[in-house]
Length: 236
Image 1 (spheres, rainbow, N blue to C red):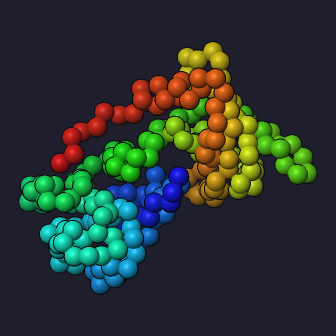
Image 2 (tube, rainbow, N blue to C red):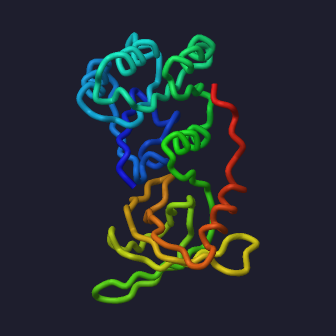
Image 3 (cartoon, rainbow, N blue to C red):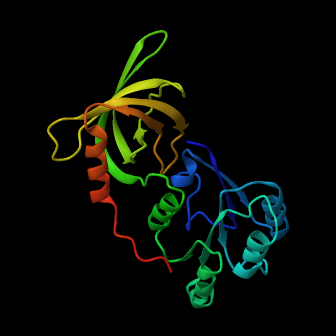
């Protein structure tokens, strides 16, 4: 999938975790800025496919961004525009949804729900939390490695597994995962796309992208993910 450049403007981690959440994995490539002047320079020169803004900030309101992007010729004029706002500004900002704003969320919206909407706007498969055991087998140049680990989250396009033992980025991997209430494991091939270094509250592990499934494994995984996804509240 083609890389999707995203610009985050003044987004604090509690509202949207760009380092460990959805925006940390392919196809997203996220940049950040906090100054209005830098925001306008980036939007003018760089083609971002999505812009996520915490407003009002530095005197900026949605009308300023919409005028700049929708009515002036900028590199990011066709970007998806998402605004996060305090609850007391939501009523004022809703009118911009009919004027070029793609989505609006209050600061009280759970980050996981915002990520689901971001995924759908970007046509990226939503990811759900899981605690499913996964067997990975990679054929390396020196030896054949096998890892039994836990998938912390899953999507129809990939998964993140918690493990201190890592295959090199780019490695082709055979996987087997057994979904709850399923007698036959879902299996196929995947590719290692990133490594994550654990911290106090984050797991050490690897991100993998599925490249193929055996039999009807993809359909079974889709059913499992659809059942796990939380119901979405209507966008403001």
